[in-house]
Image 1: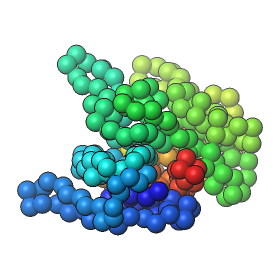
Image 2: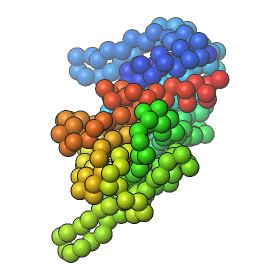
Image 3: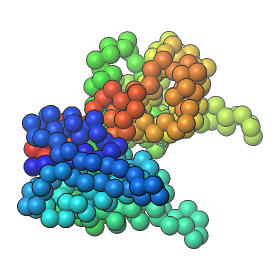
Image 4: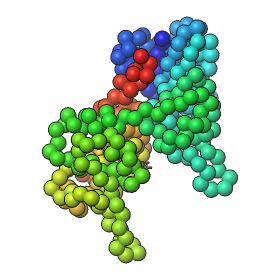
Length: 280
Ligand code: R5P
């Protein structure tokens, strides 16, 4: 078994190789003067079983992933892990003439098996030409929160759509709820937990990704107005575009913590055990 770490998942690949006691294959990456990407795997993979780990937050990362898969053409078995699968939000045609971008990219991934982590919509898995499975990192985040020993926190799904993921992860260990929107008048909307009173409690907002931070900042503002004492924001994928992290800090959120599907300063929880488990 050889572990091949893509440029966007270098630390994660090392963590997986450490957990499995398998050597991480050295790979050279470079960019040609005209911007084209190049990679070279510096170990023979012919007849070997390889695991390629590469998130795809940018177009370059998609190209690198395709190149890595191609460089492993002679491998016996190729398992591809895409911890963060970019373009997943364009997973259907919203307006006439649009592509299903997630499908276009998934179709280009030629492997024996594909794994993603908390993909935006599980229907995307059907677009891959090979069997594909989604791994759930939310329980790892909940375990981390459990170890923080917060007093009686209330877990919050920012909307009803993410409630199932939160309730599965939290199970019966904590209270959980979602933010329900109530329209008071044409331009006055109140968002508050549907079932529980947050007054005097810590709120832990749990979402699949934080991109611009708009969702979490909006939720946090409402929770504070409702009397929450501290607000924590947890997510699987810290996309954190531009100055989002700064905005989150300025909004008064106490801590922002994520997994390492994308390697950011917030990535304190590793999904390496999920990946290693599938390779054992
Ligand atoms: C929505 O479907 C997702 O679960 C996230 O809530 C959303 O993508 C977060 O985006 P942003 O940080 O830009 O509000």
